[in-house]
Length: 107
Image (cartoon, rainbow, N blue to C red; front, side, top):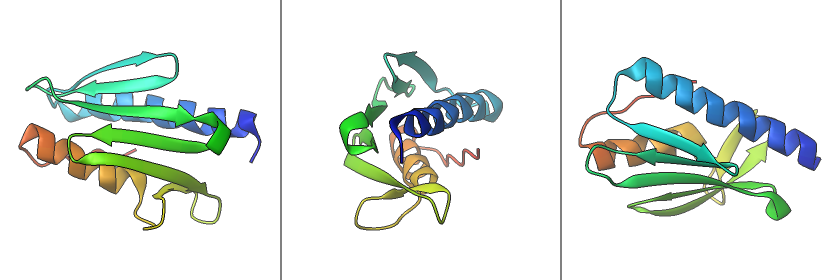
């Protein structure tokens, strides 16, 4: 994958997450700065999505740990490194843990 395609994929993903949060009615704030998307829950805990351009990965930091995702062309999705779990499933799980309510964002 070329760096331009990588950035395009992540730009689209981050905008889709922002839209999904807006549509959900959840009390989750978000801010994008320098390619990093920070999601802030009501209790002030954070989920941070960052680009790791040299590795062409998406990294996520949450209260439950750090996660690294690689893009899989065949599935058209970001998959958890070594486990194959889809990014949105991990994000929803982490946000559910941190908000104390069931979060099911769809993009």
